[in-house]
Length: 199
Image (cartoon, rainbow, N blue to C red):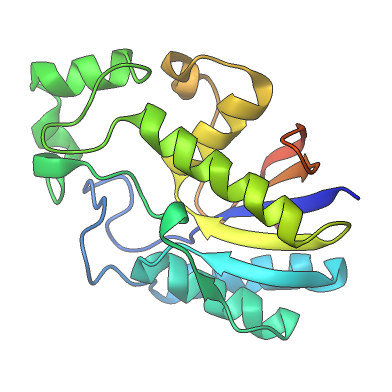
């Protein structure tokens, strides 16, 4: 009765690695991102997806729409998959944040730190794991996909592996990558693959 969860990070957009978009509205995929999302859809076509879930942010919904089209489902928007709320840092360029001691503290101690006016990663982990447990109960013995964001997926991987959130930077979740987790009703889980780049 295991559920196979394909976690997809949204595909690239023009601000990736330049701006901390967070929950900033209006960030859509460009041509390169749509090509990446098409590769994701092709990779998942043979998995018999029972459902496709997505973060409400546009870049995730754009990615999920392409995956869902290939799977024959309408994407289901779920707030639990939304990006971390980065508070007052939202919309700032990464190079402008490097000298902020609060930014350095956040990146060194993700298990306890909080963005100014934002959401701690521990709360992100709780909400996304609660969603995953509910999804496993709703889709027993099925495969589902969920399009979310890099740090949200890292929070779930850390929970499954029992890693402290402070170790989030020790592994990568790239744009348009797939991370596969097996879920059992009642909360059991294991990581099968991580950061797979569809070819």
